[in-house]
Amino acid sequence: MSIAFTPWPSDLADLYRRKGYWTDVPMTDILTRHLDERADHLALICGERRWTYRQLERDAERLAASLLRLGVKPGETALVHLPNVAEFYIVFFALMKVGVVPVNALFSHNRHELTAYAEQIRPILAIVSSRHSLFAEGEFAQALSQQVPSLRHWLVEGEAEFGCSLAAAISGTQVEQGSHNVQAAEALTWPELTASEVAFFQLSGGSTGTPKLIPRTHNDYYYSVRASADICQLDSDTVFLCALPAPHNFTLSSPGALGVFYAGGAVVLAAEPSPMTCFPLIKRHQVTMTSLVPPAVTLWLQAAADDRSALDSLQWLQVGGARLGESLARRIEPELGCRLQQVFGMAEGLVNYTRFDDSEWHVLNTQGRPISDDDEVRIVDEDGQDVPRGTPGALLTRGPYTFRGYYNSPEHNRVAFDQDGFYRSGDVVVMTEDGYLIVVGRDKDQINRGGEKVAAEEIENQLLALPEITQAALVAMPDAVMGEKSCAFIVTSNPKLKTLSIRKHLRTCGIADYKLPDRIEKVDALPMTHVGKIDKKALRQLIANQVQAQSQPQPEKDVLS
Ligand code: OOB
Image 1 (cartoon, rainbow, N blue to C red):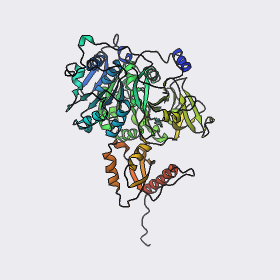
Image 2 (spheres, helix red, strand yellow):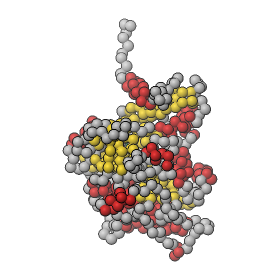
Image 3 (tube, protein in one colour):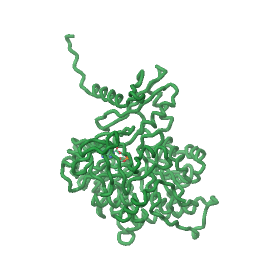
Image 4 (cartoon, helix red, strand yellow):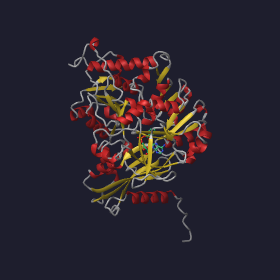
């Protein structure tokens, strides 16, 4: 059994193999390739715990064996919800070894997101952490198991009130002995992995009501990992601080932890990207490279103004996930003492990097150029016609590591791709004469909250679930630190409806905190376009004007008037 996905047409698949992008080697190779020469090299640090490549591979293998004893089968799926801890990678590689395909939810995700993912993939297994309030007790786990009956096994990181201990499954000391699926250790059969099949699901930032899943194959993802490691010149001396969420495509593979493992370097985990957490880790472990979103850069610059001695070992800072303004970009090298690399990527595939030998202008003003010579990029106008270089247009792309369809979403795929299989990224970009991309806007209904993506429709649906709200529109509003925050415009039949009760309602829906509207504006009516759609452009302008007016210093009252 394997996961259904939209394949690449055979002529392109042949090309990608011929060019050596697709090697038909599964991603388990990322660790096993080091077992001969670099087995005892440091691979991973999490708090006071350390793993060499040999130990990391051994733990992944033990967990995989425990999973086989539970009776998991290749092509089944798992829901993973872990914070930035070493177990995230142990689980990632273990699931790959047994051919179980996970969704790695962000730790900031909540009941709403986890339920939506579980309903889409029908997992047999969930691997979660009791550090999250959702799983401090077993109530939600039980409810989800009832709602999604395929969900038979729970492994819990930390103190477990329910399910089995993940630590025990990794050490091999405990499996569900009572289960009728238990196989004798000697009877374990390791599945043959096929690299052209789906290895895991990436999460789409999305613009639709339900969060969409992106099937990523071993072949396509492993290529992006190798090529990224190469472009970023990673080697066994690289020490990477993983401070953004580990499952995110940026921190996982651009070049991220997988790029670093591939190159034989070391990954240091941080719980979150604040300077308070990260600076001591950088100093202690002599970190050479990390990746941040622009709002975190602002915090790092503030903290470094007091003392930047902790950053002495840091050579490269990758910034991506949201547009990095030129003035912020310009401060990075002089104030943090490391070089900047801009990264513009997407969980769906295409990743762009500025290169190490690029001019200062390119590094400060562009979001880089694609990884691969065979990344095909089209920039088109509203009629789908290619625009000349230097002119803004919608970015469409296809290539050796850009997916060909969201999981189980035929209707959405018809609009997300053009007739030639180009993915409509929803970004508005300009291509320079020399092929670099500058992100200038967006034509998807999404808010980019400092790198965290909020699909407008998802929140609007939740708002409209309140009977007193008759119309709702979520739009981006400018914010000095986050770049964008979200503003919900609502029309209500109840003039007494309080913003507070709307927030309360959204919280009870179990939506991730970062998706809650930063501001809620009650209006009499929403502006409409001439084709009868809500005019979000007008709403964005309206809230931008208000934000600007409120940020102006108020003129001092004239005492004479
Ligand atoms: C990364 O991936 P996602 O899937 O969370 O978000 C993708 C979207 C892009 O389509 C674009 O709208 C925006 O995030 N974005 C940027 C950007 N990097 C991503 N917008 C402006 N400047 C940038 N540098 O965010 C992601 C995946 C891999 C590597 C880096 C980021």
